[in-house]
Image (cartoon, rainbow, N blue to C red):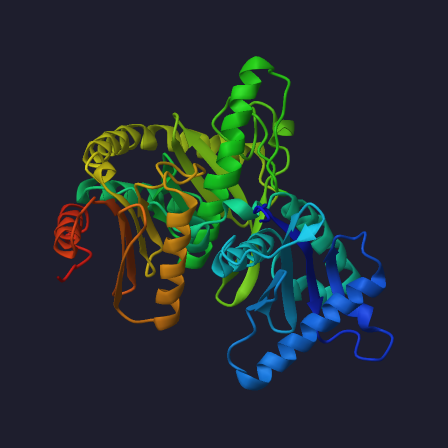
Length: 458
C-alpha cells in the first residue's frame, strides 16, 4: 500500500483571455507561469486546457465560474479575480516514482483560499491586475513575476485549514466608556492631521478600531498580524543580539528593526534620513483606487496604531508632530485597554473547557479555543480539522440555517451550526455520551460564551 505524502505544486499561472486570439499566439495569454523551467509549449498547453475547461463549464452555469477540477492523480483550482483574468493552481501527490492522488489531503476551499488571499495581497500593494495591465502588458508581467515568485515560496499546502479559509478578525471587546475613549482618540488624530484618512488600533493581535471598510480591514489585519508585526518582533529579538542586523517582511513593504516607536517610518526622529522606505497600499475609495502610505506606530509592548494617509513624501516634522501628539493622548488609554484585556483573559479560561471555532460573516469576527494565538497551529488533529472544513463547505453551499452532528471513531462528538450568518464548530469528547448529552453541552457552551449573539435551539 502506498503511503501518503504531502501535496506538491505542479504549476501556478495567471492568464488573460483577451490576449493571443490568433493561431500561433496562444502563449501571449500568459501573464505569469510557475515553474518557469517549463518550456513555452508546455505552458501554452496548460493555459489552453484551463481556458477550454472554463468555457465548457460556462455553457452550463454562466453565472458560476469553474472552481475545481479533480482527476485521478491531480487537482486543479480556478479563481477569477477580475473580468478576463484567471488564476490557476494545480497540485498532486508523489510517492517515490508513483503519482497518487489523495482526495482528502487538502480541501478545495483551503486551496481556493490560497488563490484568493494571494490576489488580495497583490491588490493591496499593487492595485488590481487591470490597472497595470491597461497601462502596459509587459509591466504587468514583470510585476506579477516579482510578487508571485516570492508568494509561491511561502505556500504551505499541508497546513491550510479552516482558519485560512475564514480569514477572520480577532476583536478585543471593550466596555462602553473605553470604546468611546478609543473613538475620541482616533477622531482627534484625524481632525488634527488632515492627511491621515484612515486609522486602525490593535492590541495583542486583536482589533479594537478600524475606519476602513470591512474588505480592506480584513486583508490589512491579516497582513499586519501574520507578516509585518511578527517579522518586526522577530527582528527586535535578533537586534538584541546583533544591533546591526535588519529583518524584512515577505512582501514589498519592509519592516526595519527599530528601537523607536515607528515600525514603518523614521527610526530616529532626530534624523530626516532615517525615514527610509514607507509602505504604500491601494485602497478603493468611492470606486477609485488611490494610493496611501502606511505608518505603524508602536505603543508599549502590544499596542499598534496604523495610519493610512495621502502624502507619500511627508517630512520628519510630520512624524515629530504625530509622535508628540500621540504620547500624552494614548498613555492612559493604553492602560485602560490592558486592564480590560486582563479581564478578558480571565474570562477566556471558560473557553478552554471547549474546543470550538466561531465565525461571524457579517463582521468577520473570529473566536476560537483551537487556535490560542494567531500563527499557531490548531490543537486538534488533522482529521477533525478536515471534518470542520467539510461542514463549512456544506454551509457555504446551502446558505441557510442548518445544523450538523457526527460522532467519530474515537468517540469525539462534532457539532456544526450556522444561524443568521454565524457559524459555530465544536469538538467535544464525551465517551459513551448520547445525543441528549451533547445537546446539553452545546447549551452550556452557547449560554456561557455566546448567549447574547448566538442562539441554540434544542
